[in-house]
Length: 314
Ligand code: SF4
Image 1: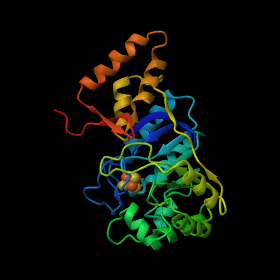
Image 2: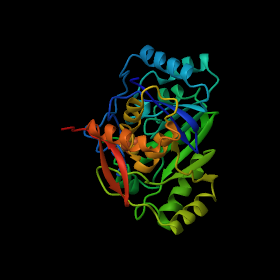
Image 3: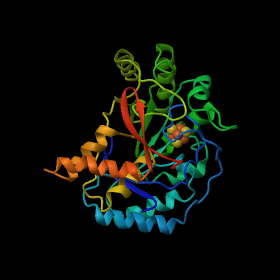
């Protein structure tokens, strides 16, 4: 499948079927923590990158094959709202399934009324807000020229006013960057202005190919929860797990996931063990065979090996 990946399992969205609408990497930002590597060329013009009917057909097929989905999630190789026509897709998906639809976005285009309108029928929208000031926004998110922090916040405020679904803001907490008391108080003030239903505090648990980013200390995580909880509900989702049991082609399923974000080797191994109960000797040969394709490479992140997509195979 070209546009579908997963289902992957996460605490936030349970069993979630991923739909990627973008050619890699198409983004309005160049975040320091991005798992997809550097944004080589910013894209800020919205386009229908691939035919919407073709995407819809794949979603229909995947829903038919996976009966126990909790969410259908639009997310992918960059900024989801760059896909012009996502509103149509959400509407069509909702005609044939009652599974709720979520959209993960950096929120940078929400200042545009037509973008906000395309999101109105989603059941949950998860935009990013990593900073409470222009300076920190520039340092962390590194947006394309012309996109400002104030515009980002105003887009979120306007969207909150118009949107009746669940608005869950994602805050990436980076050790030594936005985890000081001052940065957290600035962030809390902006969150108060936006008034989301919830904040999901996330951590850089996966390697970022471009720049080393660090996990915040436990003390800083606790402090972030305490400060942000003064203005909204804060959840700190634990890491999700991968489930390959319903995948018709394991290599294809692993490629679809790893090409979108690095996967901890331990997590991958556990998912493969679950596919071969009682055949533990098979697991390492399956993993060796996958590595031998040259499509993946191993990188170290905080002492843990991760599988990342090899964009330059031998
Ligand atoms: S918004 Fe997402 S895809 Fe874009 S640079 Fe940031 S982390 Fe990467």
